[in-house]
Image (cartoon, rainbow, N blue to C red):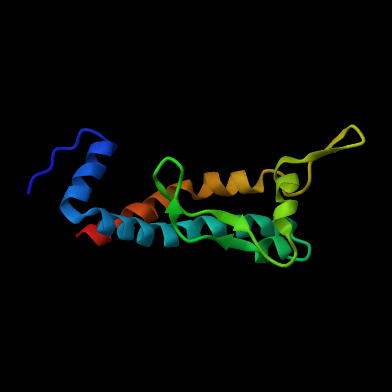
Length: 135
């Protein structure tokens, strides 16, 4: 069977025609889980440099793959646990003002750095898992 690809949307359409929508959803979920784990591990690694109790690292949680509003599959990495670290993660990531003075904590930009540094390995993992599932 030959395939002529002119864009990502066209490729997705042809793959769904060959394998079916349900199988493609299953393949993408199987690729997303371990690939998201790479990103979560990188975030945890970046948080090691400024950890105090380790609660921010312990509460990193990956949701199951789900549909985004635009119809793509995604895995949400968030903070969930008994210490409610989700309430303060944004303060650590973006800093804050106290009495008119800008405060930049030790973990300033740690999540953004983790996303940038794990982008290549995330993409390679997605490609590897999709190729394995298709062939």
